[in-house]
Image 1: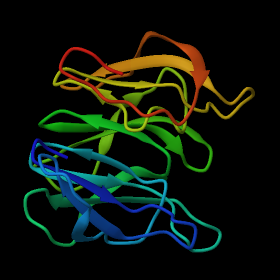
Image 2 (image 1 turned 60 degrees about the vertical axis):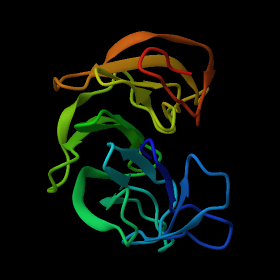
Image 3 (image 1 turned 90 degrees about the horizontal axis):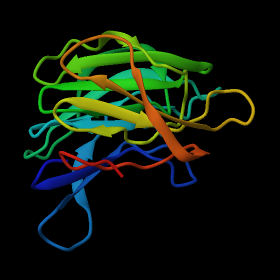
Length: 205
C-alpha cells in the first residue's frame, strides 16, 4: 500500500489459490474493489511496496505436489490493472518475510521447502528480479509477515526454524542501503510464528 491505497492479492479461501487483486481507498470506508489479477494463482505469498509500486513475492500454487514459485509480480498502485512480471527471487519459496523502504525491498528466509536463511533484495524502480543481500542470523519461515522497518532498517521477528519447538523469539535486522548479513536486534517476549507487524518511522509493533 501507499498513503492512498491498500491492495490485497492472492490467498486461499478453501477452494483453491486465488489470483485476485483487490484494493481499498484508505481514507474512505467501504468494501474492496477489483484491481486486476496476479500473473498466477497462489497462496502463502508475501507483499511489499514502495510509494508507487506494489510487489507480490513467491508463494505456493495449487499444482500437485503444490510447488513453491520464485515469481515477483508488480503493479502501479495508483493505476488499476493486472500485475506484470518483475523477475524472479533467487530461489523458489513461500512463507517468506518482506519489507522495504521507498527504494529497495528485502525478503527474509521462507520455505523452499526446507527452511531458508537467504535474504534477497531488489530495487522497486528496476525490473529484472532479485539479488542476494546476505543471510539471516537464523533460518526461518513464517517470520513476521510482513516484516517491518523504516527508511533505514528492515526488521523481522519470530518464525519457524524448522526444528522443535518450531518457534523462535529472535528479532533481527539489516541496514537496507547496505548488503550484508542480518544482525540480532533482541528477542520477543515469547517464541512465536506467523506474526503480523507494522511500523512508524520510529517504532515497530
